[in-house]
Amino acid sequence: METITTKNIMFFIFIIKSLIVQSFSKPFSEQNRILIHPKNLFIQRAYIRNIEKLCMIVIGCQSQFSYCKKNNKKKQFTIININSDKLKFRINSINKKSQMRILKYNTMVHASVEKYLRMGKYMGKIISLSDFYLPMFEEKLNEYKLPKELKYLPIVESNLNPTITSKSGAKGIWQFMPKTGKIYNLNIFRNIDDRNDPVKSTIAACRYLKFLYKKIKNWELVLAAYNSGIKNIYKILKNHNKKDFWILLNFFSKETQNYIPNFIAINYIMNYYKEHKIPVFNYYCHKYKYKETILIPIKEQISMRFFSYSLNISHQDLFFLNPKYIIFKLIPYKKRLFLRLPKQKKNYMIKKKFNWNNKKH
Image 1 (cartoon, rainbow, N blue to C red):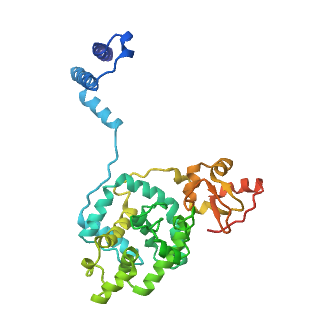
Image 2: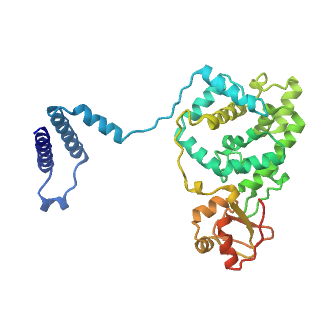
Image 3: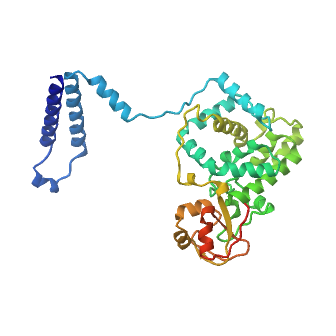
């Protein structure tokens, strides 16, 4: 009996809503000649909602209705604030496993952590991208016997965007200036920029970081030099002769002052993003793994759009794997130019009798 009564009341609500909509509308023959004023539409919808709520109160299930509505739109919120003692404990735990031993807690680091946490959705995208890039960074850092924590430096530098350009002209995932890039074999041509190549620029960054550490012997100041230039570090050390970034803090630019706290904050977030419920989404690049890609030599001028069509790989994916090609339409034939592709395309290349050789990195 109760079920029948509820159904009748709900049917009654439907009739009332239909009548309200009809009262706000013109006859069907006139509807094609008029536009509903937004204000009237808003009043109409609000009125319907109020009637619906009133009817739900009458049948005594307002709280249940509200609960269901909330559940349908349930969201996962990132935990932005964190207790200083908890943050200090977690950072110290990471630092104990660190090869650099520069991951320390202070108020600047705390502010940087909460700054990145407020960018929860954006950090989720970076974490997703890291699945592709971090294994490659780790491989190269290991080859050059550098601390593995440096794999997070490109997040501070470029947010893992291999084609981004700074105001000063630094470019790529490791943000090389043209002059420094050239020293480390990152060449720039009319339609090719090696600074955009994640693998080449990572090798260059490893060589540069190794050079900086050999000269300075202090990882905090090495990072400061990477950000502001080694000449600025030499100048500050010459005047103060103290190899302690935090003591010399006020002698650096504002950007460099925040650089090391940002680096420590990113190390923290990449280790504890699950505890903060940062939502990680699978972007188009998520289907690729660095170790599942291969380099093939370009033996002739090729149209990238036609090539992507022939390989049955999207143009967007092909660009993601080959960001060094600035003009991504026609790639000219040039010695020692390679194209990165998924290894699964190997059989296709053989079938088409494409002249290629396997390249390790």
